[in-house]
Length: 249
Ligand SMILES: Nc1ncnc2c1ncn2[C@@H]1O[C@H](COP(=O)(O)OP(=O)(O)OP(=O)(O)O)[C@@H](O)[C@H]1O
Image (cartoon, rainbow, N blue to C red; front, top):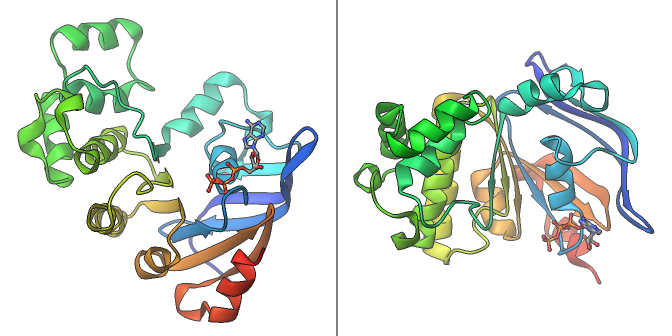
């Protein structure tokens, strides 16, 4: 029996984008501190699953429980409170290009700040020390006042991770975090996510295209095929037959 606290629990979850069924009968539990990679072909349902985990989407059938709460039963304020505990990074970074890095990092506070505070901070940046600490953790403290669109893709993904760090969530979700990066930058970002997850005790769930990266940086691998879980195993137990079956046409 797992004695760690349950972060995510999906019970018989199906998600349809009528008429297409993106996910079918998903049963899944993720515990605190786990590093889980979701792998599978394009269209297998990885991003849809990430969106269900952070409450961006609700299931068509079944239940999604996050930190002990059934998301479908939450009013907007409670849903926001749960969502503050989940930080998500994306393939396309989702940063505001023409703002300085400090402002993009400070966006991680938006779930907790009032509108007034957020607007004020765009003129006189607040919590600069916190932003600098997060940028130091991701290795680019010198970029605090750089314009975001002057950074490389790898540096922009680091800014997106720093934004999640100031949010200080229990969980980091990463939807194809390295799909826009070259192999070396991909390795660096996955190493950084692994290290942050270990050092800060954050649960990490990522969707990934690269199977080798998944097995190298994650402890648990969930293979999705045509919207269903094909396997859910420790990275060390993944076999060539499983990989073949996962990508079989
Ligand atoms: N908002 C939506 N409306 C309609 N169909 C959608 C929507 N989002 C996803 N789908 C469909 O659901 C299926 C699963 O998509 P999803 O993006 O979750 O797959 P994926 O495994 O993340 O793929 P990729 O690796 O290419 O990002 C696909 O057939 C996709 O076209």
